[in-house]
Length: 522
Image 1: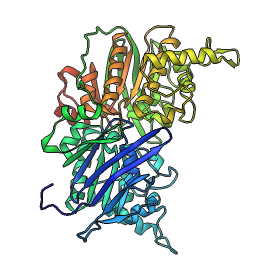
Image 2: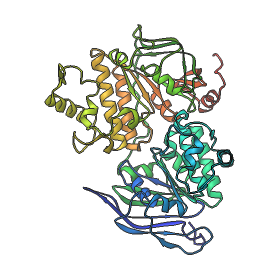
Image 3: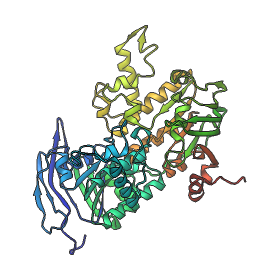
Image 4: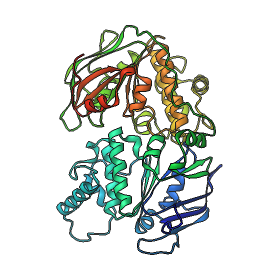
């Protein structure tokens, strides 16, 4: 910021936050100005979310001070934030990475939860109309009358942002906001944030996607090991420097993809159809073959059938028509256990909600698909030494950093949670399929991970491809799809618009297909 800049919207000085055995924030300074998007970068566990939770009233700092300049004033004043209610009353609101929504209630009902007004008479039509006006103004399109459980992850994020805007927040903290969005949605969010800061609001943008930092942010602060290692104007830095500051070493942005000759078809989908949670058509005649030693990527805007597709081919959702074949074996509408026994593994898009039992130890999560047989169990009894040996082997092989096998899985960083899921699923796929390469359904495998963890997960997927695994990769990161896939299929409203070799993929062509334009036959 220049010398003529206004006083800071918020200034955090010397913030210290300790937890048992760790200093999450070690005398961190952060200054954010009105009308700016300030990116906060760092690896998982660097202290970003903790720092923002202090600002949002979720945690009380052990040391340090917070100064706020209310809109219309010229001098910062010391504030004491005891709770999220205090924060929102001061115009500070946070959208957490794991949303704070009530699934059985509507969008409008979630937005007004906790408000003091109205006290006596609730006019939901008026609330819904105000929500529509705000959503149209900021282009955060969502149906106020829809139930949360019916919405995609991206739509739920919009609800969280709308909740803050409805409450009049001037300082918005977004924790990993682009982790659940497609490239197009990310661009739209960037434009939304620009509209917000043009009105004088301040946005603190926690992200691991360096492209979007350089594209959308004005300044960036990098945290590493709980300390502020740099604050830079975006115009004076680049992706390579930011990645090095984040992880303390050089990071490879592109991995070598070895030439692999695809083998026989492992997973075959024939005219597959299915309904979504609302009972509406989600898959409309999907036909696709995935070969051994091949990664087929699925590109598409969120909500076009990707989730339903992953659930049908893992036994979590019934198909209404068509077939799913695994090595020519009929698997349509089989149970999840039968798919596991056929050698199909699944990395779900929701790590903690579906991929892990967060309160159970790391070891329990690692044996979830191996506990039924030897050596993990003997009859109805689990064998603790084999469990420890099995878990230690996976922790070592997949470089899962954990204080111990008995630590609850929810306490691991996002990257290590994903490595634990990969370890379990890849091992289960090999063992259940009799030691042969199987099929892996990977849904947003690097969503929300820092650059170092993303590099490790992508490397693991390419290693499994080299070993003959057939991989269906569902991702909303086009760069990731192009880097990892052999072929890319684009889905729109439950239909395949076209399939292109990844080495010939054109971003513009993919974007057109993602918008509903079918690929012309060559």
